[in-house]
Length: 119
Image (cartoon, rainbow, N blue to C red; front, side, top):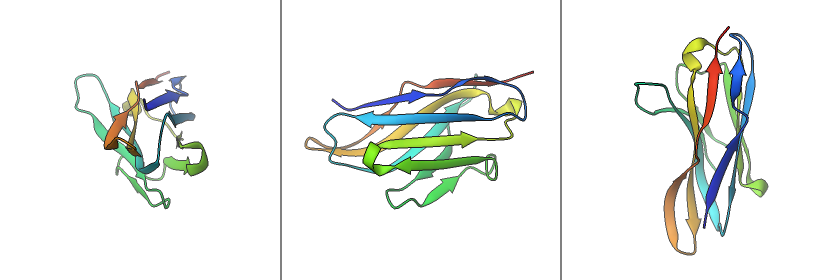
């Protein structure tokens, strides 16, 4: 049974920073792309950033220059450093991973962590 567990969300003032963490556990053979998505109230879930197993990254235009995605393959973990946060960054943030197990390959999602940017 594979699980993704996120942590690090919370309330922060505009201009502040937060660091999200996500760790995958279970009978994992390998992990391809890992990423972060977010969903604001009344909006569709959207891509924030992704990172491949060889550490190639991709960002949504709205977060470029403010957010940094990273991962530690040995820990099956992915991180999102969020700086210069804006109220429009408020959303539930979800971790996502393309994972291969003995049973096959599929996409897994974390349970989500709330990020609120407000004064």
